[in-house]
View (cartoon, rainbow, N blue to C red):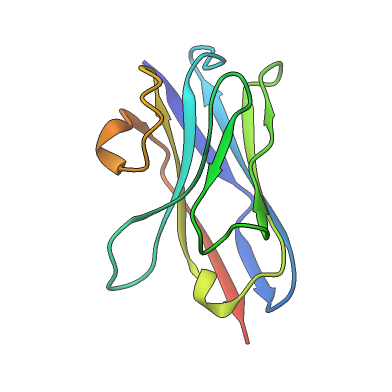
Length: 123
């Protein structure tokens, strides 16, 4: 069993930056694919980015060039560095773990989820 805990959300002005953290508790997740998703009010949960155990990354078009997903396996932590934030990035952000390394963008391939952290970008 893997427990994921997100932190780092908050309120920021458009154009600003935030760094979210996803820490694993209870078991190492160094071999897992870790994904970030977000869900805005009234919208479905959407894929943001993912990183494999080897460091291979993939980003949604909406965040490409603005967000990065560095990983520190020694600390059991994956980050989401968000730059040039826009009001449309406002959402609850979730990290998720896929122990089978399916490298997917669908929420259904991720078995473990954190509780989410709110990000609000003001215009």
